[in-house]
Image (cartoon, rainbow, N blue to C red; front, top):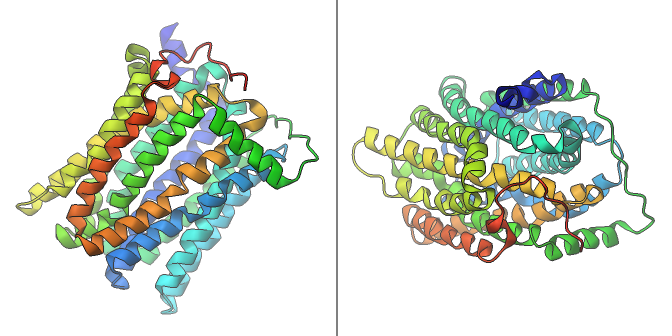
Length: 418
């Protein structure tokens, strides 16, 4: 019986179809995440602050997540929105190699691509949260999130390595074509899914008023408010370092694109291990304690890379170890937290909650990236990574005294009366 439960979702054709769409798309994303900053650093000679602005542009659309999520909540069928978002990202990314072939590459174009693709991503993710709870049953939330997170982790293992080699062999702009095509595959797979749409919110209230209600819901919610504070703190300090990590590896550690990609790929195996073990760890030690441990280890892991020195192989190993520890910890943070949030959110509020959450949680990322870029220019890139590691440890304070850290099992959890 236990073996059947552990493999049940692999027997679900709908889940397998969505899983394939997510897996291919995630793999392509890893290529672009490496290629885009490398284009800025190696082809356009971007400064640390300019790289910070580029990273900020990727996350800037999340500031509008609350309003996008409120609009999405009013749509009964979320699937067409997800398909449209995938196709929009494909077209936006294809504009980059076209500009390259016509010798029109510029930082402004990279910023525009980052913002437009980021906006499409917000539409997709706010629609997805309502789609997810109709794709799988409540008692499968942890299993589904674990499997999807494992696939994402595998993409972090193979994507950067392949991406780094593609950048060296074909140039970064051409490598991005691969990511654009993965969104076409995702759109086709999602279009094949037959998922019963949920009820749209019937309300005559203006969008702004409904958006404000979504934000109040999050702030008053005993679980969501604390998890928002914790995740936002983690993301602010993490983006300070992530905005500079490729630049640090390329210029400070003097590693080639191929070596950087392989180090990221090897290190990302920690994410696969974390995704696979997050569910059993949560059942063994409790979801809340596992979330808290992840909130400490994940942001602190960047210090391993920041302190790297010595021969090339030692620096590459330190980068890989930092990625491994961080990837493992973030899965132990994300998998149980996402499952807990799905269990304690009212159905008619899901897209608005995702939007409100992203507006703050992801909306803080552009600020973190910009602060990281300026600090990198002012005090040095290595020093900024250490500040990021130290500051991120403050995130766990949000969980102290909260119901999250006391949560052992998700079974029986219901949305609270507010």
